[in-house]
Image (cartoon, rainbow, N blue to C red; front, side, top):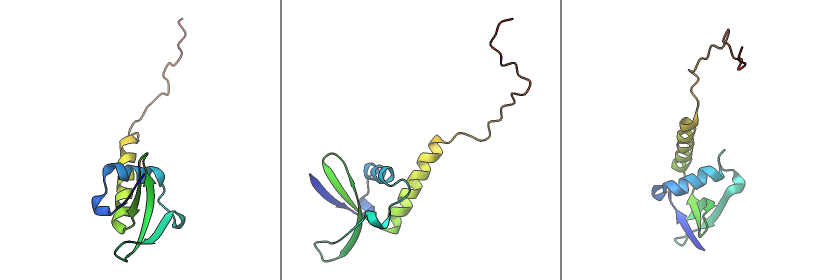
Length: 98
C-alpha cells in the first residue's frame, strides 16, 4: 500500500471528497496525526485512504476552508426549494370514483 503526503495546493477532487465523506462535521484533535517529515519540519495531517493508497493530508486553514465550501456545494445541489407553495385546502384528494 502506498503512503502519500498531500499538501493543500495539490489536493485533488477525489481526495477532497474522501475528506468530506470521512469528516462530514470536520476533524477533531483525535483525528490529527503529528510527525516530523524528512526535512525535519513538524507536520500535522489527517488520514484518508483508498483501496491502494493512504493519504496524509497536511492541515492548514486553506484545507478547512476547502472542505467547508465543498460540503456547502454538495448541500446546495440537494436542497429542496422552500419557495414551493402548495395550496391543498379545498382540493379533492379522494381517488374514489363516484
